[in-house]
Length: 344
Image (cartoon, rainbow, N blue to C red; front, side, top):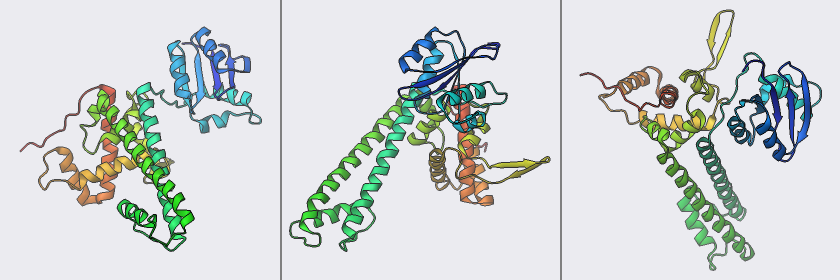
């Protein structure tokens, strides 16, 4: 595609701003249209560069544009900000997206397929229910603590305490507040059931997907990590190599180099994919805590030596880094995982 047309799209729910740039670099139109009109535009346009910011529904529109032969480029919003001219309007945003899409050296995000997006949606729902459960837990404890009633942090203590408090013979809580406490407890139990069902749905989907089955063969990778790795890596085409993937997820040291001198700043806790990094760290910790006295595989021998040299925490990060690189290789090549055994 030499000097193609560019279609910059500023996505929204009801009104979508579309900026069209010709193959000669001339701005031909920049107007707001409906989602229905955008579908017609993508179907009728010749193969072009279709650019949009990474936001809600970008993967849906990206897959739709790819069906019509367009070159889809999804750009991080913070990278588009540098190309914004004038005040922030929909028209200026769409123009900035179109300019950023043809800028030399710009990095683009990979379009997720339906399987990846489904796993991501289930994980988002699981996190939402988990946060709601924590919020209800804290609210119930604060509710009764105002009247001097305390309980232990575990779920069993909460259940036993609620049964005692709502009993008619218990007078620690005013009678008019017991009915509200029953409603809060019923909602808490419903949320527990919904969270469990969501986890089961995601686990069932992970066990069905062939790429996830291969990822489950990796040490330190369970159903949670396998689903998150596949949702973020896909077929591996979004990254040049495994190191690039691990750097994107935040399991490699941050680099700050100048004048030919390289400085490694350590792991940046606020960058990358924090949820995936936390899951990988927990999986690595479970593997390191169960290392045998006599290693069987090359990786086990490497971990034993690494733990003695740098400690458990750094070894966990190193194993998480290796896990991401290996996962990228498995997804990019389609080959199964084959651990290397020590020769005795």
